[in-house]
Image 1 (cartoon, helix red, strand yellow):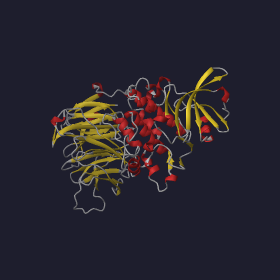
Image 2 (spheres, rainbow, N blue to C red; image 1 turned 180 degrees about the horizontal axis):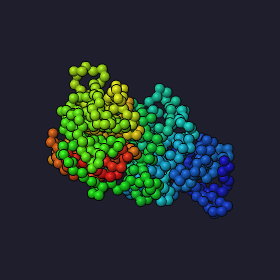
Image 3 (cartoon, rainbow, N blue to C red; image 1 turned 180 degrees about the vertical axis):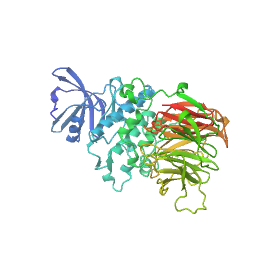
Image 4 (cartoon, rainbow, N blue to C red; image 1 turned 60 degrees about the vertical axis):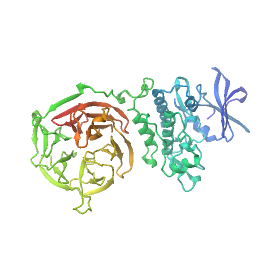
Length: 560
């Protein structure tokens, strides 16, 4: 690490800032090949060799570059790239400077790319905020100020609570010994989420709140910053994930960037994406929707897809199979009464239904009734009220059944149906639906008590909420006082698809059905179709090539 500079070559100019570390000045110095070069000279009081060693090894478009250093007795200077456009904090503080949505997203992405590089090189920044982000030509953002940085495989024990309190994760505050705060990559992610908010609002988190109040409430897990209503949903969901009170429930920076691949981007930033991962323009495309009228109209309400390509349809009180030559309809021999609430298919091709008998019925791969699975909570009095209303099967083949009276999901082994886990959740109504993504997160599509809109919440198998969002349809809601959830599925990339429609009381309005797509963390990606007649069920084919919608007397196919 031989980057020492000759102090006599430095010409000091205006001050760029001061702090507890010392001061920063713009300097110029002569180089053998390039004439005079500008740099930022950081005069430090507490010279840390570790900081210089970390900087000397880093080389990334979104991380500040070390030019050299000088040390001679009390004089200690670190030379860094000169940020021609100043700090991000300075830009955000100047309300006269434009801040379009594309520029916000560009900086949010570039900060994440810099952080990804640091984490990949076992480096924790420990003081991420707008003051420590610098802007260069073409509005390129770079992370700076590694005065608190540490090299580590996973985490470090902080000798004191350094950093900036508005960006401190709860685990750094809520500890029995404030001198032994345990700092990890997850705390860096928490601070990154605060930086996203700062970019979106042009203000520091908890702006105008007292220090003591913020520290106590955040440490107790009782306070998060307010996200403006006009903030894009995908960014709001990202922030909430980064601020999760439980550190390991926060995403890694790799996951953050993976999710960003599905976020809207400008032409200026689209070059960072792999063409194969860019989102399509998800607007209504009539050519992508095909309609198949049912030969025997049955008021199709639930739908599932079999591994062999057959489609399972649940009507009022019977199950139909759509498949074989000529897409013939076959009625399952065992009647299901009095009403079908949900249908699912196991990885082996077994058909499962939940109906008004309050049991789950299992049909084998030959579509013959096999056995019942009790949906009682395992230790409940059989006379107690149990009303299973939604069901799915996860990738391990386990059956998940939701009870809307108790807001509990039970996880059953297959085929014996033994209760393995009970999960507290949010079901709330008979119209709720559930799905499981590849990360073993359970997605609940439900309507809260007193809410006009449906909601989606993702929980893990311990019942901890990972994220949530509110799908909204753009119809005039004067025709109805709520939006009913009607289906939710995930594709192999964990993108989320939902269908819903407007209703009033028990009356559903025709031609108000919507099909939406969301990112793996709930960011809105577009309305795929609207004006659906009476959608009541949603499924995705085993190969992930299409969505199937049960739309009363027709089956709609949306090609992906």
